[in-house]
Structure formats: structure tokens, C-alpha cells
Image 1 (tube, rainbow, N blue to C red):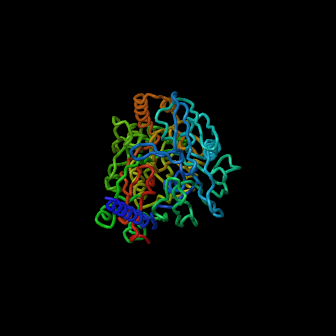
Image 2 (cartoon, rainbow, N blue to C red; image 1 turned 30 degrees about the vertical axis):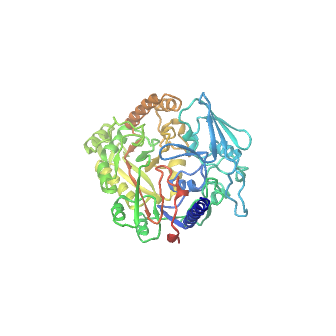
Image 3 (spheres, helix red, strand yellow; image 1 turned 90 degrees about the horizontal axis):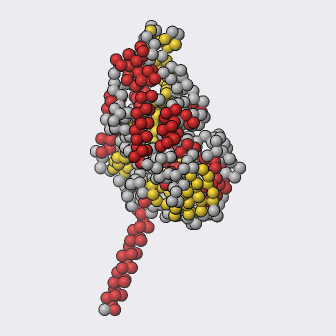
Length: 537
């Protein structure tokens, strides 16, 4: 019997040894993924483009995060409590978290509650140009109790508040003298991000160069399996899929609809569908007195054939929408139908608005004012599909007597024109939501101003009141009713022409294993991805 036990123990140790050996062999390798453009700002408080946000996801950490199923998990926080009156949220922080080391350091510095407090203070400073201010205005004050506990005191009770605490934390030791951020500061952090996330930043040379990241060995949730990640930017959407097919990249974050069939037919690759809480729209600058006329905005919406565009340019892989919420959310009002295509109604609305005369070129006018608008479009989004949408929009409006001038801008110039100087008439863009569905920053009148998301200067006292009420009520059914009313009003007011939500597809080489994509935070599960030893470069 004793010999059998010894044999069993030896066998067990042998099996465990083999398991650890296989596990060790899986660690390593390089993942190269492609994006349509370069990151704009790798500072969490300032970032508002999806390319930067995905990289920030890899570099920085947050108090908590939530899974695709909506389950809250701890990141920098290991425990948390919510008071009985729902007005106080306390976080107990991990004590084993280290910041990524500075280039001259061999070991990272300790993460503490002071880092959270500094990030919050900068984020909420009135001079900081961030879209996050409105999202966190429900917080009254923040206090740290020692190095590893931080308490958030809320202005009013809030249900389901935990998902809000997913903002990324910045290192206070690199922001000692900084009170606010506007994006034009000469900060070390802007050039060399330092976070607590699974990957540390190595290099990024220029706007067209690759961003190189390395697995952080001291990562508190466990060293990621893949040793290196390279983000490779592309200026042309037509090239990125071909680069994937020819082995130049391993992962394409967002496959153009027309390329899906080609990738599906190649056994080397896997396609993952993921539905983000997002939608596309044409947005209007209501500072323009003509675009402030509701009939004009409605006419534009009736003049475009959105179903035709969705079918022609996106292979029909999506659905038309009627209002300001993503259709996948419980906030969406299914009773409101999308605006149908009707040039006849568009012409009737423009006649009613007084634009009954036409120039020799066929442009409608009222007195000396002609219906001519400038549309600004970022070059970084200037792929073939976007160009087709813009040109189709231009042609549809020409048919009803509206002239659209298209102005292509570099991304920073575009964001400045839209969010800072408001030098535009119309934009084509997307909004990506998280779990909160809070649209206050988009449509509340207090969110009008430099760097804020209500770029079109939309004002409606009834909408303001409903938005304020939605943020304070604890009654879920009441909140649902509020959202349905908001949807109805904003569909009628049309500060946007609401277009569609798309089903996105990521594609990756099958050498990547255990790949799982989070619908709103793409790289949530990245530390579990791996490349088998024989496939590593």
C-alpha cells in the first residue's frame, strides 16, 4: 500500500510538472493588431477616441470593472461597501499594486488612495477639457482614509452606481503641480503613459508609428500570457483586412462589412461578432440660425435613404434607429419608429420653413440666405465606407435643394472644430455607451461649452428636467418611463439625425487562443489570451 501511495504521489507530481511546463510554454509571443488611425491622446481624462481608449484599457487600471454579463469585479479595489442610504461608497484598495516603472526605475512605485483623489480632482476641475465631468457630477466629495481606503460621498442616493467607478486612475507623482488638463500641456504622461494595467508602454514614435506595449510582470492580477502587443495604425480601411490575410497583423478590431465573407472563407481566421452599445448619427450645430429651425433638420432626416445606405455600405449588418439610445439598451423606446425616406415630405418641410426659391444651381434660398452647410469629417475616419456615406448624404440633400460642402480635417483639427471652437455646421460621428445610458452630457444645456459633448448647443428645459430626474430617481420603472419620454422628445426635436447601430466583427488569426472580446471594453480579458509556444514569433 505504501509503495502505491508513493507511486501515486510521483505520478501526480509528474502531471503537475507537465501542466506547469505547458503553461510556461504558452507565455510569450507578440500580438499585432490593426486600427484605422493612430491614437490622439493617451491621457485617460482627455481621451475621447476609440483607438486611444482601447490602448488606455491595456495600460491603465480602474477601481472596478464589469464583465460582459454585467458582473462587477475588483481591479485596484479588492472590496467595497455601499451605505444603507445609498449615498456613500467606500473602496478598500489592494496593497500589492505597483505603478509601471519610469524609464530610469527598476521597480514601480506603490499605488495609493492619493492617486485616485488626484485623478478625481483633475477630472472634475472646471477647466479640464473632458467629457467625464457630467458623468461624475453625482459625486459630492471624495475623501481618503489612509493610503488604502477612499470614500465617495454622493449628492443623492443612487442605485446601480458601481459601474460608474470604472474611470482610469492616473499617477499622482507625475501630476504634482497639475490642477487641470486641457490637452496642450507638455506632460511626460502625454508622451509616455504610466499606468497600473496589464501592459506597460514602451514606445510610440510619431502619429503614424506603431505603439509598442510589454506585459507587466508585476501586474497585480497576474502577468499576461502574451509578452508583447503592437498596435499598428492604418490610414486606409481597404488595406487593413488584406494585411491580416497576408500575415502582417494578427487581429483586426473592426472588420469592414464587405470583407466579412472573405475572412469567413479562410480557415486560418476566426470572426467574433460583438454588439457595442453605440450608434451613428449626423449632428447639427444649432448655433447656425437655419439649422436651429426644426423643419430644416427634419427635412434633412426625411431626405436621406438610411436603409439604402445601411444595405449598400454595411451589407445590411445593423438596424436603423429612431432616437438617442443604443437599441441594445433597456432605455430604448421601441414605440418610436425611425424616420422614413421621403423626399416629398422633405420638400414640403423646406417650403414650410420659407425656403421656396432656388438659385440657378438648384439651391434653395429664403431671401439672400441659401441652404448651404459645411460638413466636417476627420481624415482618420476617412475610409472608403465613411466616404461613401458622406457622398451619399451630399447627393440626397442636393436632390431637395441643400448644398453640402465637405471639409476633411486631421483628427485633432476635427475635435477642435467640433468641441472647442464649434466651427462646423454638420458632423457624421458615433457615440459609444457604457452600462449607465446617461445621455446628460450629450443633451443637457449645462453641457454646452468648450470641450463638452453637447457640441451642437441643444437646449430644451423639459429635456434638462427629465435628465436631472433620471439621475436621482431610485425607481427603475420610473427611470424607464423618463427615458422613453426623453427618446420621444429627442426624436421629435432632432438635434441629430439618428442613423443606425451596427453589428461589429473582430477577426483574428487562430494562433491566438482563449480570445474573448468585451462588447464595450474590447481588451477586458486580454491577460487570458495566449499564443501556443510553436506559434510564437
